[in-house]
Image 1: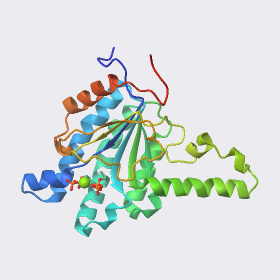
Image 2 (image 1 turned 45 degrees about the vertical axis):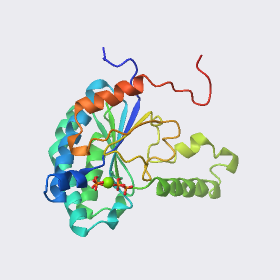
Image 3 (image 1 turned 90 degrees about the vertical axis):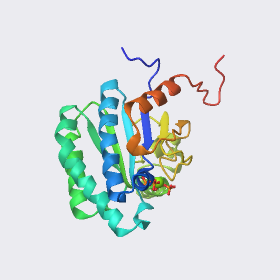
Image 4 (image 1 turned 120 degrees about the horizontal axis):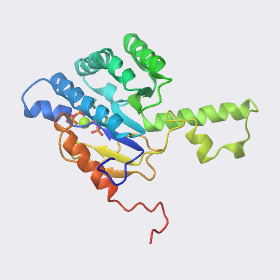
Length: 238
Ligand code: IPE
Ligand code: IPE
Ligand code: MG
């Protein structure tokens, strides 16, 4: 039995603060990102053990290409390392991996690694682990609008059949519940273009800890906080 009265079905995390962490420790930014990956492993494992349905992690935004090429290379390198070192354990844990974002815009090696991870785990029925890579919430909505427009053009659906549900089915998160809890570390309080549609009624938590220092304790605190929230969805609970 879980220690939490109520668990979110879908947790989204904006893993922020690797750069500041590196600065604090007077080390290269790449090492801050490396430490960030360490923090990630235990959060994924715990989410799977707790029986959370979906975990969406913001790893690289469509805007992150603006960063110094060296930093972008370091992040892309870590991505490959992550997939090659974690895939066996994730698959064993029955985790189903999905990439949110434009995979075609990734470098070829990275694209192949993520596609093969998706292929290998697509039949798994445990935690849905979504990794947002080259992801932008607005780009996702534009893509969905195009997909639906194309279906209408082909006569497969009528404009009236464009509903909240059919739009949701045209998003990368197709088939998954809306985000219940969004956590952003490092004290920043913004969405930075993450899961704009899916966060309509999400509860937000903004712990000030920098991502590489985010531990299971911090995660549990956020989950307990979530369990105590009064979610009304526009209605009344009393
Ligand atoms: C988040 O950490 C990781 C990515 C964006 C990939 P940052 O690198 O944004 O860390 P800060 O915000 O500079 O501290
Ligand atoms: C959001 O963080 C993206 C990721 C954590 C991957 P950023 O650090 O890129 O966001 P801004 O620039 O502070 O809004
Ligand atoms: Mg940041």
